[in-house]
Image (cartoon, rainbow, N blue to C red):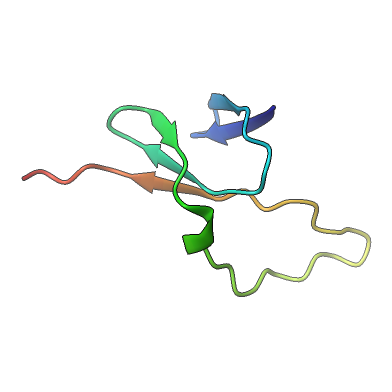
Length: 67
């Protein structure tokens, strides 16, 4: 299980263990999974010499439109 943190104080526990992004719905405080194949990250900042990137967490915050 992996922990997904939003807003610094709110956490969700996700049983899906593959690499995938998350939608966080601000109006209902729900976390859902968008299609992972639609996410593209072209480049990450270089890690400091003494470190390596182990994971990238993507949380896309959404608000439903009025109308």
